[in-house]
Amino acid sequence: MSERRVVVVASLNVDFTVSSPRLPGTGETILGSAFSTSQGGKGGNQAVALARLGVDTTVIGCVGDDDSGRGYRAALDEEGLFTAHVRTVVGTPTGTALITVDDAGDNTIVVVPGANSEVSVHDVDAAAGRIVGAAVTLAQLETPTAATVHAFALARDAGSITVLNPAPAGPDIASILNLTDVLVPNEVEFEQILGTAPATDEEILAVCASVFAQGVRWVVVTLGDRGSALVGRDSVIPIAALPVRAIDTTAAGDSFVAGLVSVIASQRSLDQETMIAACRHGARVAAWSVQRSGAQPSLPRLEQLGAVSGAPASAGAV
Image (cartoon, rainbow, N blue to C red; front, side):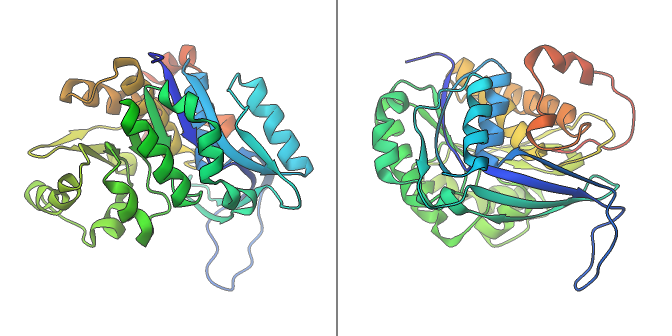
């Protein structure tokens, strides 16, 4: 098993991002100030972030047979990811995300899955050798759940740690929780999955009991500029965000997940000390990311992370 290999069952989108002074209301038209196009998708962002953090990263995913797909594959190759299991789907467009970012760094995102909907159990089987040799298998919910369930089952059989970022959260998540070691939702996803928004540590532990009963070992809830909460069977440990000024939070959660997973893959452990270190590293990666615009353009390389320590200002985001 590779000490630092991670396999990502990944959504791969092209992001069309506009900047505006504020997010528009229903039926409202406002003037924007900037427009950019870049590679994105939660899975793609997490895979690229892992590669930039020095992790041997394999991508399982699909792109369309269009200019966006060809460009995305070339970009992944340039980042040094293992892309033999990125399949081109004929006659289907590459996934697309429409993103609006306001002056406070908050955003709204609409995703059209495109080729991401074609990721299949057969794609996972083709990459089985990479999964069996991985320290961590990582997935989100922007690709079909059946493929992720199969990938996690292979990973569990091989002793690989499984990490699920349940975004977007949906009713079919129940089919994968019993194969998930680490669940990483944000506050909204946490409430959607568990059906409540607990206010105290005791309430958090009570509602998470059902998740732990299915085999999940840790829940890491990302809390924006309040950092994150590491939830175990009998403990809730707050992890602070770094105090930085957020410009664009588009890939904040993805960068946090990549930082978290890079430590877990390095240690190949889920003990409490490792998980605390993983959450803290995730916070550092996210703090660097939110100070830059765009999704993948904002993701740091390992040697750049020293720039976030002691950074002044008011609001970090995870």
